Amino acid sequence: MTKINDVGVNQQRSIMKSLLAFISAVSLAGFGWAACPIPSPPSPAASQESTLEHLRRTGFNYYREGQYGNAAACYVEALHAAEALGISNIATASDLNNVAFLAEEMGNYTDARNYYLRAVDLLNHLGEAGSIAAGGAYTARGVLLQIQGSFSEAEASFKKAVSLLTQYAGAENLRTATALNRLGRLYIEWGKYPEASSLLREARAIAEKILPEDDPKLITFFDSEASFLFRL
Image 1 (cartoon, rainbow, N blue to C red):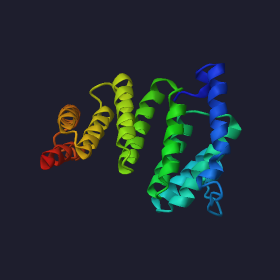
Image 2: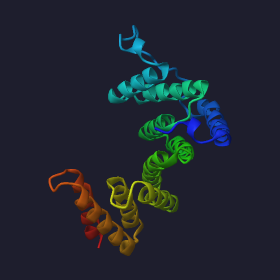
Image 3: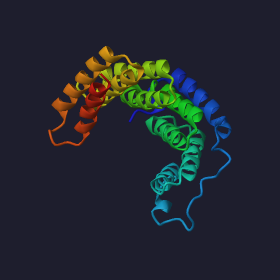
């Protein structure tokens, strides 16, 4: 995992300034008013954890229970704790992604878009591993933009994901195939069938090289091509 200390003093200051400005504005995004409801009494395991890890674990537990508002509040508090500790790394970006996902699940699409973008801004400064994670964040943001009907923005987001993942994860990587598949599905919905056909075939070919024949993940790629054929 690449931490902020690995990227140079000037970049450290730039990243932390950006992150601080964002965290200071978190209360405007609909989650800052709620405190993370830590279970009481805390479990024995909690006393052995750092504040950050305890907040993250509590947020994940609330997510599993379907309590998205509480989960988001815990991840936002984790962001505040990270800022107080001067930490800005891939785990911090993961917290941003988690809040984005939860905002999306609760229908707060504008907030979700902003959180995904902030995650990408941070990840782009964190080396190769950060670039791969940024590819995933761009893919997730593209899906959200497609749902909202912002096809041009979604296309740009998916293309950025494909570019980053191809460069840093490799052309024959499942994450790269997934981004290509999502871009192809966007083109189906957009009516750009020639572009969709090429991308879906490419994504499926990559997936078939990587995954065993009985892997259920392959269904996603075959379903996409089936959807394309149904539209013709």
